[in-house]
Image 1 (cartoon, rainbow, N blue to C red):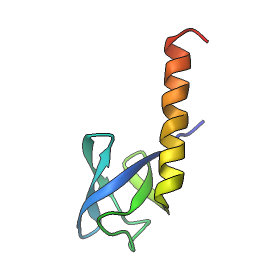
Image 2 (image 1 turned 90 degrees about the vertical axis):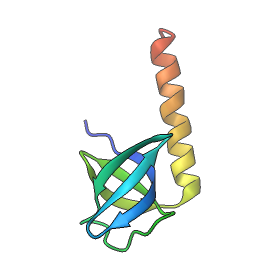
Image 3 (image 1 turned 120 degrees about the vertical axis):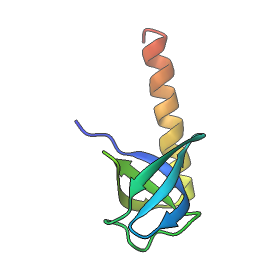
Image 4 (image 1 turned 45 degrees about the vertical axis):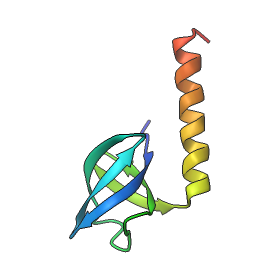
Length: 76
């Protein structure tokens, strides 16, 4: 199973950009979403932004990931 994680584009530099994942910033390839600009939310898989999403969808996905993490750490 593959997992794409939402992040917010902080800076665009050509076909790459800096994306913030809850305070952790990583360099990400933007080849597949060339229309992405700073402030956009994107889904990232294996270092590539694969899709632009709206902020509400990003926040819902992050909430679900946090819930899953809490349940996993709590044993169920």
